[in-house]
Image 1: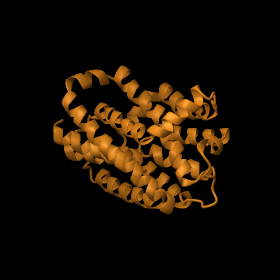
Image 2: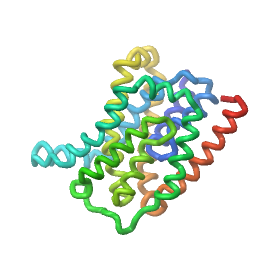
Image 3: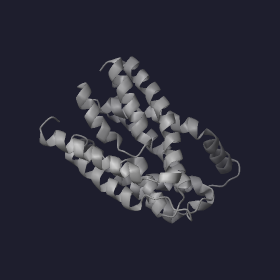
Length: 265
């Protein structure tokens, strides 16, 4: 992998990690086009850049949560965030190798692109009467459970973590802004956990030490594009919801299907 590959994959990861069109579906195509089919470790390590983008974008919100929790002793929101991470954490820990193997099954990506795309078209419209109060009051245990279970489903490649969790939030009567905010706050421990797992258990540290330059460049690009993607999605969600992304996902599934049937990938 060279620096051009790192820039392209960093751009793809940064944009598609937050825009709900499936990062795995796009990485399948771009890894093939670039001739980097065995870049699983690199793809996951790009999460350092997207995680940094989340922390920077929501820095004031994160600071407020820390102050409320550890100074004001208001543990409710943090406890619900942690509880919502548990389904994905448990399934990832128990079935990590099986889930990793799904990344090589393009038909799984295609199916999930279509299924979640249809759900976005059917149920992804913003509700003007939804709960737009701060997360501290908008998120109850039922909402945390629904979004947490949705995030566990997102372990299947092709799903889109941001897409399925925002959709679950919308269906739980959260406003588009609150659904996205909870989804992105929930992404911080989830992305951090997945990255640490790859670093410690899946040879990520060895990969970094052998490819410092490309990993650094890729993460700088994923950070910058991730910041843009968060702002873009938040602006679009309030007016358009998820429907447009649903149609895009179905189109992407069609492209992948053609490449699969013709034996190109």
